[in-house]
Length: 464
Image (cartoon, rainbow, N blue to C red; front, side, top):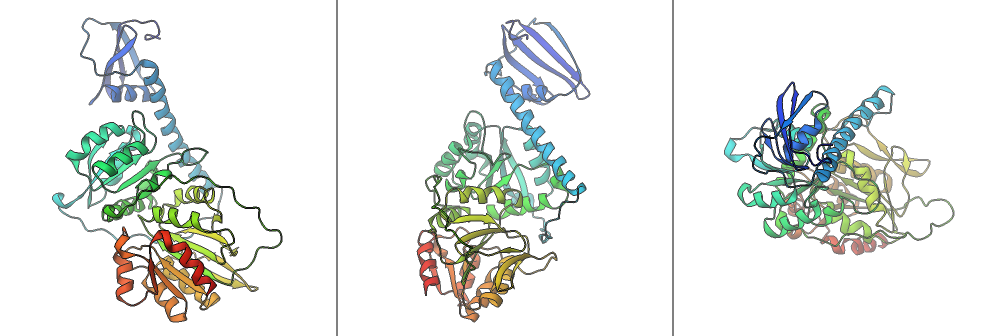
């Protein structure tokens, strides 16, 4: 109202955290102070206040200008951020309601081993780029609990992030997808050209039509995380987030290849009649950093691919279903998330989180995927691949794109011993090459190829 009437006023806001001030001069907000914040960030902090008192008085002395956005844009952006916070909190309530209503629990997820602390000078530096102070605060609180990570700095938009990158030299950047001033996609492209480093995309909204935050996985980002919530500090979600950040820091980011944004495609008409039970099964394992490889492989699979394909992918469970929808809309084959007891169908690509135990069972001659409720020390890719041999015998192709330490080798060895075929992503182009190099050194590999040529190789292997 003060801005609309083009007044000049000092507005003081009082609540339990102390006073905050906002200067309106000739109808424009020119300066704001809120605790230790100044300028635009202080305006947003004031707009987040839910209670308190305010006093307006005539401006006797106009301070130096620290806010350069028009008041309409400030209000719109401030309330957009409030909506984002409200959306995050409502998801926490929804998750709690699901538990109360007795929704079936997910299979147990193996917890990561404790991480040893390192000295301050050896800690991995994280830069957080997000326009929401609420999200920045939660990310900081989570990272502070990790003994090997430290928040090196923050930025509220892409332009500010680019200005700080040279100084901070982070080991990884957590980058919001949707920001004012400069979008996450533009910021990412500048980072990959000017100061390359691993980038993890943060987003609270992943559905809908049009542009998608998953597009950034093809532009050079190494992983995707739903924006964290305060409740993540309980139940292991924060631990999983920290593990993913640590793994991203150690990737060979110099090997990351960008690609054009994938277009949506029109799937061919489905064949009439019953779904075909597969005679062959292709199992693919991928870890943090391999999203771009999957985006090169799955959309190239032809309709009628002569095998069922199971991808064990290390992606945050909260994001995986949206990633499956994204791939399905851009692939000729059907891409879907697996459900326990779901029969496997030839020509369908299934995607399953690497933290949830899974195995193949045969019932009435039809193979199906079944969740295992107990936590085991066996890697999910190794566990699933070994169980597949009992059903498909030598008609199994095992593909290892990447894996974390100690994973993937048992599955490749079991397939090779049974007479199936084993494939790895070329170690020379791999962003996480340790385990594929170990597989090659132990003689467990029949073929090594690039992501671009993998689809053709798989078709030839299955036909043989």
